[in-house]
Image 1 (cartoon, rainbow, N blue to C red):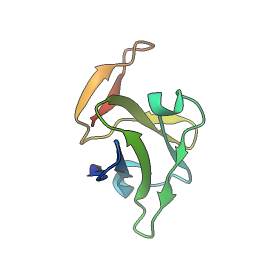
Image 2: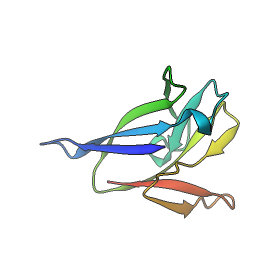
Image 3: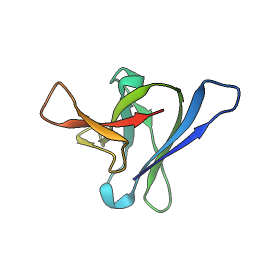
Image 4: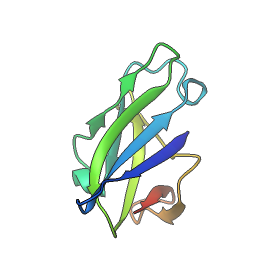
Length: 101
């Protein structure tokens, strides 16, 4: 997994590309990124590449910290292995991934 951050000149936002490798979800048909930037609803659809990797790019305001997780096939929650940090979700014993901009 990888988190790529591209800060935009003249705009207080960054393009954040999130990746879930094929080995993290080898049989997945659908993966979404769900987090506080989506109010923990719906999620952002990730595109499945020929390699089996899933990717999504989202624009987020800078100077903030965001919590998120990946939702695989609407059943399985996983964290990003390369997150900037992890914090307790507050609703279970599991942690959320964190990206810091």
